Length: 423
Image 1 (spheres, one colour):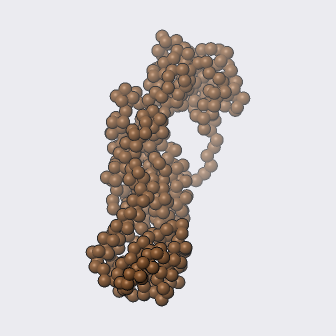
Image 2 (image 1 turned 45 degrees about the vertical axis):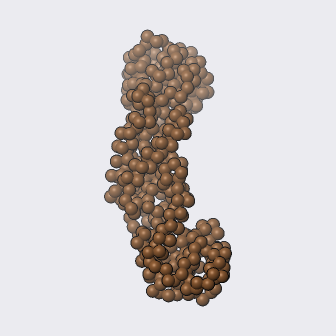
Image 3 (image 1 turned 90 degrees about the vertical axis):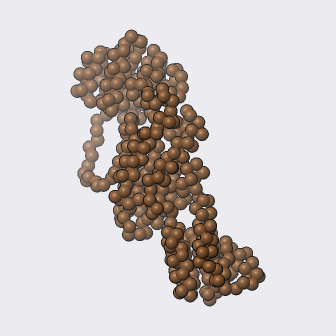
């Protein structure tokens, strides 16, 4: 749950304490000041969402509210005026000056709480994502900032649905929103009252929780998402572990089914929210498992230099002229390239070279051993570009190939994908 920050300005101590206790029951943070200079200092240093101002201050209440509105123009906090006056003209003047509500000092505790809850509910609801009903980016950034203003230990989870944009393109907006709604419900079912969850982008969420709970939540969400995934795909798509978005004459990457990727970082006092976000995004790129949802935790760093890895490509292309051309294009660009023309040569060279990318051609329907080679490469987690003049996209992508490209193709096009997969 998102905690708002409430500023109470009153020169009567007992009044401030009474309101503070009533608001803290709602699990909100409260700051008390008894003079205007301290109040202005707090407003300049912290983002306050609620301001409760009593007419016990020395300045005229309506004039002070006008000043507050100018000072807080960007954040637009909710202002509740408290006065002992029941005069209608006073009420109208205070409301006209910019107050959102006017209450008398004689108000009961129950009514005060209900009024505060109503304002709190409207404030939170104005920042909800219309699909998931979780807080939007504006509130999430505030929650991240606030988490660094306390001494509490926290863990930050970045939750991202891999391949959801391709799912959106193939299955439509209603299906896309259903996935997000389901994820939102799953997150709500796992979080405690003091946890925070909200959007950092349309289909990326941030969850702030305790360090001990972080991995348990990530593990549950990964497991639960994979177990409901079949509800969003046809039986054929789910069994094949991919969807086809175009016909056989158009190249297509194997984006696979949607998977939940989660990165986790523990709070570091020397960091700030921007650093945490950057690290979370860097870390989540290491979740590369195609066949299941996964999470990764950054608990420690290893110091030292990382040597530049050699980039290697293995080409299985029966057309000797095209094979030679691909090899030369790679070598011109400082990429080690080897060519083979048989299954036996391929397996031997593969083990010796340990390539980063394999280019495989299927030109004859009867050459089913090519599909076996493709499955072998994919099990080794090597990037596979599968070209074919025999157009059968479904069979090719079922092997796990990362890219299907029909022949004839442009050398510049396939080299673009070689570079992309190497990087």
